[in-house]
Length: 423
Image (cartoon, rainbow, N blue to C red; front, side, top):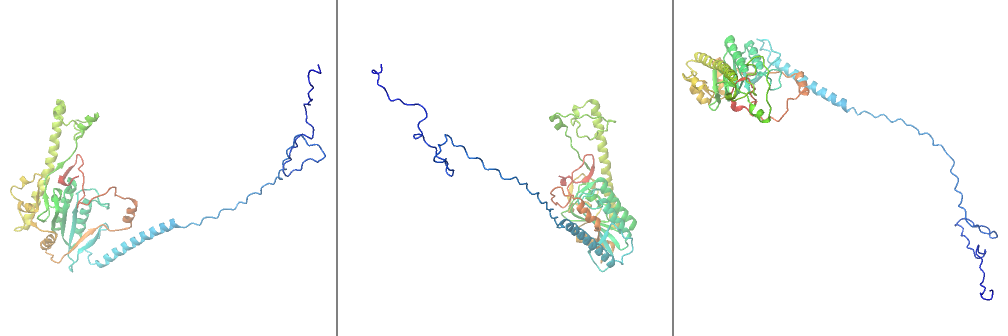
């Protein structure tokens, strides 16, 4: 058996001799094992370096922040405003004192604290003519932000002029399309009372527009001067309103009204405008309402015609043979129409054609004061008026100056006004 199979060189399976084993290369910087000792089978990793000794961080040093130095801008602004207010007040008081000293010779009346006198045209004579402006819509409300409304301001001027014996006449400068019935009537009565109690004349000078209520306040004047192109007339009354029931029906809104009387909702804008659609009972009520409104309009219109008739008759009696007498058929023209100054002269509604200078000349002639000065009353400027400027502002929109204040008619109110100036 041994002869049949050749013996092969036996090989030992196991660990090779030391001479043939690969020696591990020590890492760079680490010394290997000594030459004489057998190399280790696996090299151990070097031990980690010891941690640094624990040192506690020093506590932070808290430095208090430096206080901010106030610039004082707020106090400076307050002080500046206070100085401006005081400067204005001092200036106003000094100017008032100067006017008082310059005109101290006119002490024939008790001075009105609400008004101050300013000169429009100064003459050497102590005689004066007071110029009163009737500008814009005639209303009892305050439209210019002052302390008094138009009616109160004009009435106060006439009362003050009545106490001043140096005021020999009043010149009413009218540039108005009219306005509220009551406001125009109060001005009319104040002018009539002034002429009756003092015996001094009031002359009206019409500007570009003196219609309806503008003519109403001019009618009692002793003399009326109008420009040839002045728009005047419009003698009549208007009551305006809107009926929006048709719009409510389109959007599906129906009014529910509870009233104590059958006429309590008279002039309401949500009522059915078509009388044929009403029930017989509602139709009768509607017809009665229309009669009532027409009666109010007719009564106010009769008052207007009476003022024109009386004023022009008394003026012609005093001015005769000068001046103009009302035409016999003047009432046929009192239907709301407007006419020019020339047409008004032909109908007897005015006495003379001219401008403001002509009205001044005529006033001096009637009052027999050819060298009279022209003066006006103004509300004095004071500290309260200045502070009022900082407290409120009436400017809420852009306004266009058309020479008068535009307005809108309020439903249920009667007006002596020409509708052509309404927005």
